Image 1 (cartoon, helix red, strand yellow):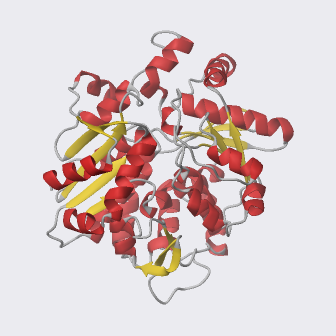
Image 2: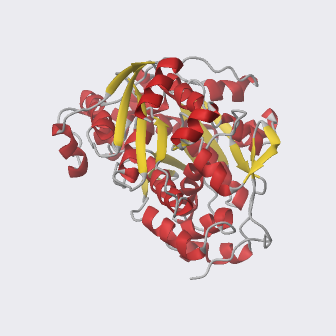
Length: 446
């Protein structure tokens, strides 16, 4: 099937500008491979595409890969050949994202059916394939630098494992990821190196950004990022918003509930609405790290050190993608809060939700999805006609300590691809959260 669903034909390749300086503009290759502008902003496309009526006439008949191809073509079709883009998308979307109905109007979108059992597989697999295409013919090794609060590192490690011409360096906070998440980061070997940082995810993210802002170092090591600061992570994550909506009855305008940490997932949903997807509301569901819900209530953005919770992938106190959210709403607090509602919940509330969902629906929901389910329930209490779709971002087996504490031993079946990692040896280098020491380590390994 050919895809040409843009409402206008662009005559030249799209350029990408920094959120800090619209006059700093680069092409797709520079935006994806360099990841971060030199002014510490984030890249955004100069032009946001819109899917035209031809797409909306048939979108419910399209397969998940066909939806992905239409969306990817809208964003990157002027820069990537159709054959290459099709190969990238089909290699990315090789597993489903099914919609599970708990009760009328209460749906769960399962995003954990990929190789590392987390939604990050969509972005990581797409990115690995796009980067391979962008660097075809290059003879320099590409160094992929990534900070993780749990699932990003595992997805990136899996996507780039033994990819020729690449090496991956993963920074994760010591003692703040689950045991099986840690094995996904540290037990693969090959071209994957894990750094166990004595600090928080925010410290890991700051170290990664410091390396990119050191332009001499970034150029010498040929650095690129696989975090959601990289636009290539967000576009494929928008695929499943269309896929979820297409699984609902015609005429239903969903409210998406997103367990949120660095806010890449929610930003991807906002990009989907820019393309034309009808959405009633976005609900940003967080744990105690409630910087964005606080902003949506009060109009003041006050990033602060993150605090550890049982929903560890959301333990982010300075979410990078907030600046993209602001850009999409033209910097208007009023506009953002009209489309995005923020809610936060405690660990005790999250634990109770895990038990409640199991008791009511015989469904095991992970600690991140449980935060989302609480927000969906709260939203429907004041909007009873609303249909909510809660993103279940990771398989509950990745959080066995929490799940078994609430539901009992052997409550969750561990998929084989996760179980085999439990017996492998952890290999990681311990480093303090110090930019100078991290720079020295990078120089030595380069």
